[in-house]
Length: 232
Image 1: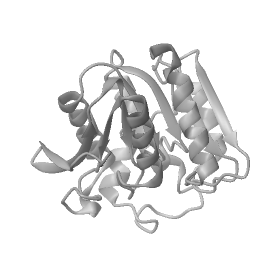
Image 2 (image 1 turned 60 degrees about the horizontal axis):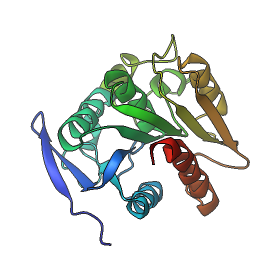
Image 3 (image 1 turned 60 degrees about the vertical axis):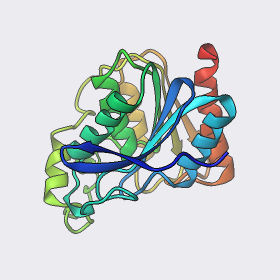
């Protein structure tokens, strides 16, 4: 079946591109990473997975990214979280399963905090919560590493790893053993901070940050499938 057409919603005057595949609940929601979009290998594989199972699937591009117009450099974590929340609230009914890649994993955690009654489960792929806080330990500034000051300040207001993360749904963290962008220790910190008693960390031997190789994507899809079993 052809992919759903790109459509747009207005969030604070920003046109946000999305693709929505209608289907049964729970709806899968994919949240891309920093400077990534909804057409990446993991997003497409998850969409195909959802189609095979007859599940609804929502993908979106943050403002200034992919098919969403705007200046990427003007984006902040807070704005992109606002856009993801609006898309979930306005485009999808019923329970959802969040799948967030890298920065998208940070956004997914905040969505689960904001909509606990709707988020049935969460999967973080090389999830990068708080990367504005720990990502510059080598002394590099945010600007030197491609982040705007506004983005850095926004991230610092949305830190999660300094206390309990009050999420109670099942959480699965999939991380590459050799991820040099988001150290495995970040996933271990997130696992320790999450309040849920149902949290598992799957470390892929030899895996890097992207986790887009066929065997890595298969691991991600298997993780999502196992979470869905009680609901299907």
